[in-house]
Image (cartoon, rainbow, N blue to C red):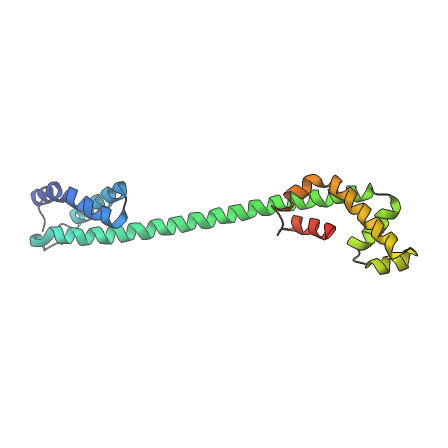
Length: 187
């Protein structure tokens, strides 16, 4: 059993050295002090059970290692939980922004295509939205392949001007739905 006087002598005589020992484990002064204080609290709470009065400093060092390990595991778990929660929030936020931008980009594309001359609008829509080849478009519209290429080229040139603000963000969202929508349009 540890008496109050033994406890006080041990605390005053060993606190600084034990803080240095704890610091060597956790590499943080404040945490080291907290760990040593917790080890002393544990000793005080178990003072009636402890029979190793001869080697209390060794008992405290072992206690500090145990408290430090628990402290590290707890903080690691909390940090991982925080990182996971932040990743979930970031993912949800990015998805919301991406969905919003996707709708905005699709609307801008629709408006820009509607501004094209009627024949260019038809040729471009068949090419980019219906997936028809230049030959198929030429055959369906009874025009030459060169005329199809001319309409598509002219449409792309006008759309690049109309959609310039969205093309700047294309690089940022190149792997998202927004980027894929723009890529399909211009590639």
